[in-house]
Image 1 (spheres, rainbow, N blue to C red):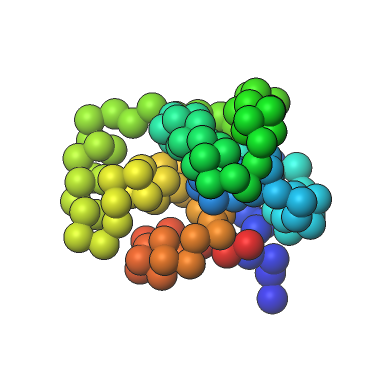
Image 2: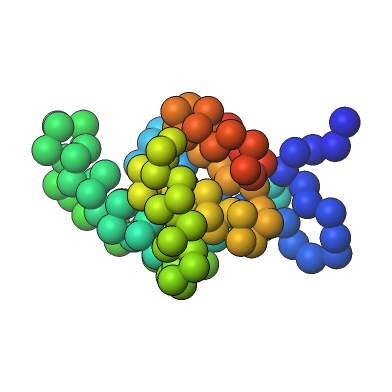
Length: 142
C-alpha cells in the first residue's frame, strides 16, 4: 500500500495544514513526534486565515492558563518560521466555501476548498473536520 502522504509526480509533496496541526507544531511538547508523521520535504500550504487562527489559539491557551504570555508570544512569532505558503481565496473559492456551510464552518471550509483547488491532502488533528469532509479531499489525520 502506498504512503497516503506521498503524491504522484516529480515535484515535492504538498499538503494543506489546518490550524490544529500548526498550533501543535508551535506549542506542543509532541511537536517532534507530530513533525515525524508529516511527509518528508512536504511543501506546506494553508489559507491566509491561518495566521489569525494561530493568534486566536495562542490567546486561548494563554487565557486558559495552559501557556504563559511569553510562550503565546513565542508561538505567534515562530509561525512565520514554519514557511507555510498562505493563499487568499478568490471569489469562486469563497462561494464554494459557502456551499459547504451545511457540514463545515467557513474556517474549516477554507482549508477544504484550498486542498481541493491544489489537489493536495488536508492534514488535521480535528476528528470532526476529518469526518465532515465527506470524501471531498484526502484527509491525513495525525
